[in-house]
Image (cartoon, rainbow, N blue to C red):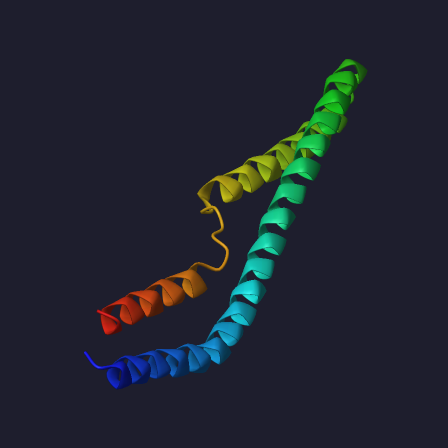
Length: 124
């Protein structure tokens, strides 16, 4: 292979890389936005789980204490409130368990990998 052909090939590779930088920056911005949204959703579910757990324990304790008072409807209400907060806690736990762990910038990584494979093929 002549030097001119090698220089032309490397020039084409360089041009390809320069053209892809703009695409990478756009894709990186999209990936960061998606990662931020996932993080907010996961943190919200985690906060709901923590608050639900705390309220469950609080109302469970109140319900146990109120059991000694022997009021006709008071006990039903207290146990119902405790049960509702326990349900909120279980739902938040299930939401957290069903979500996949987040993979940041996986689309950008796959694009760069495919471009690197194309460059390796072009340079053979």
